Length: 248
Ligand code: C5P
Image (tube, rainbow, N blue to C red; front, side, top):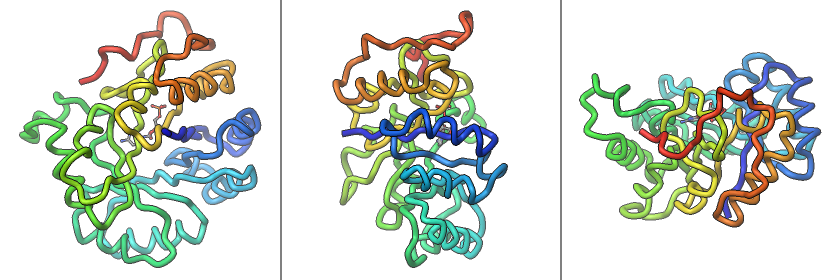
């Protein structure tokens, strides 16, 4: 069963607390990322834990091996369930991260879901799927999971000794604005393709009734089909576009 991680992409503890309160009992896994962590630091992690939630610390680390290893040690002390790091940091960085004692799970970022083929043209990339595959193989045996688009999940079906945990951002319920994402899928598609987790931010945070949107997403994950109750209320008319056909 695919699990939902809500991205707490807000700028203050009070906003985070409001969302945590509204989704209490529905969601128990949250992402603390660059915005909230920069604004509030470890208090943000502690706040989620106070609500009984697990934390995915999405800081997308990439630096020299020693620095990343040391940062992951600190993330372990915070009690984060998982942290993200860029596969692009190279094998020695990944090895340093994996050697850390009492560390959170390591989730390797492959290619951002906000990038499309045209963004990668200047790097002579054959296609995104191959790039995701090559990066993922580099992390095999060192990482616990991979962050990728739902459009690349099939890459992980063959050729890996053990099926890794697959985390999919860039998820858009039908009717939600796509924003800066490019390689998007619906919750149902992510579930069908074998995602273990989906990470969803704005489609939930931007609605007037986040709990209702979460209900629809959870229903979609469970049933594998779009929830009939889906109502992206709170989304200003005119900014809507459908997730379908928006992949690139
Ligand atoms: O608001 P939205 O649903 O697009 O948020 C997606 C979340 O997933 C953001 O917090 C973003 O930082 C994160 N993410 C992503 N693409 C990745 C890795 C993480 O969009 N490759």
